[in-house]
Length: 160
Image 1 (cartoon, helix red, strand yellow):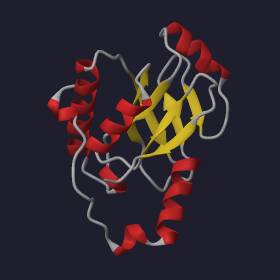
Image 2: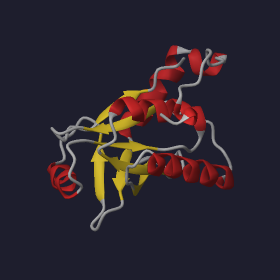
Image 3: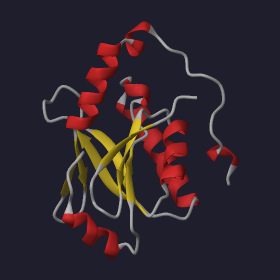
């Protein structure tokens, strides 16, 4: 395993605004209500808790049984400038390539328009365990798991 893929150590600093039950609940609701678009032709919109038969075809085309949607933007839901997010996405794409996986562009979308579109990647075949390490490395709250049953699931990143 490349050394940069090793999980970060030590607890994450917490602030009052991110530890309150109402803030956590609102964040969870926003992630659950978001749309996750995979940039295929035509684009595929993924919703948490719903099955997506089109994913089975996409998995078959990419010779895998599962996939993940992961972003490196806006760590811990704190907005960064576009240039900083672009650098983080390049680093994530490079990490995925070093691990020997391919990826397609994807985007996280807020249907209410309160949060800007967030660049992401759809990664076929990446094991969830490695996806969680990457999510932690890029300080993401969660990722989207698209397993063989095509029921999209939100998987929260353990805070360490």
